[in-house]
Amino acid sequence: MSLRSFKRFDNITSLRLQEFARGPASRKILAVIAHSADSVVLFPCLFALWWWHDFSWQSIVVPVAVGFVLSILVTSAVKFIVRRRRPKGEWGAFYRKTDPHSFPSGHASRTIAITLVVMAGGWSLFGVALLLWSLLVGLSRVILGVHYLYDVMAGYLLGLGIGAGMWLLMAFDILF
Image (tube, rainbow, N blue to C red; front, top):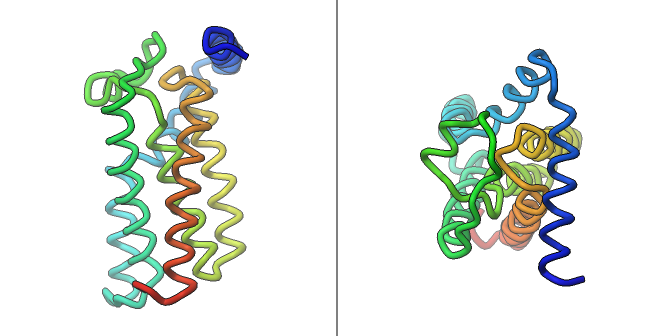
């Protein structure tokens, strides 16, 4: 498969997925899902959970936060290098202004990294719920037109690598 056919497939598939968000109700639901993985939502949630755990350094929140921050840093670096423009569209003006690059998806990267760290901490049932959330976030980002499908898939791969690395650090008690 050539790069041109690869990009064409990505564009066509992404456009077909965007057809699922025709009505205003579906767009609102998808927007809530997409925004649920915004950093401005997750940072306060992580802080509140850490507070709930009495600011313990032994809390699962610490490696989750480290994985979260790592995913932001690595994703931002790759975005700066690749500089793929976001798909054309009207939804997500905030994202389009603050971060005009779409590859890889930071939302996909951070949600899957968080999911793996939570599972590594032994919270399997909650991890399964987070996995479903992560998949919905990634899909919503494509349907709403702020990412191409391959942006999200690349974000998941990047986040899986970060999450797996964190899992190893936790398993061997290297940092946590």
